[in-house]
Figure 1 (tube, rainbow, N blue to C red):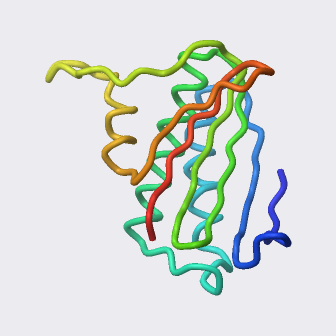
Figure 2 (cartoon, rainbow, N blue to C red):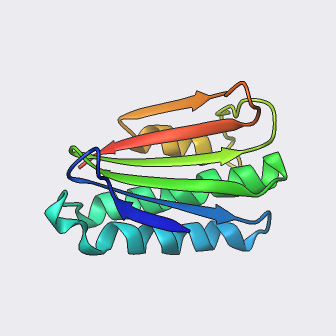
Length: 140
């Protein structure tokens, strides 16, 4: 785990966490995200309770997807600054995640649609080194 205030980017705080491929990682992502956003970042950006709740849900959904569908551990990166909260999850599995239309009786499958609805920007990057990084950006 690393957490630091950005040197090159004044007024930016970042943290990165490695999470194992276990169901418990989604809950851990929620706790880490909430703690990161409610700590001493008030001098950097005023992150309201609604944005903390949204970012916490987003982190949980993205990590759960990485564990469930990617079947790998993942790296959770959080950043707050410049009026934005960014949540990134990188896993080593190939393939891009797809939002799907959920049916009213489905017990799962709505995570990406929820993430997209809560964010200002959502994208997926596939680096040449493999895997993928899913990024969600919220305005604060």
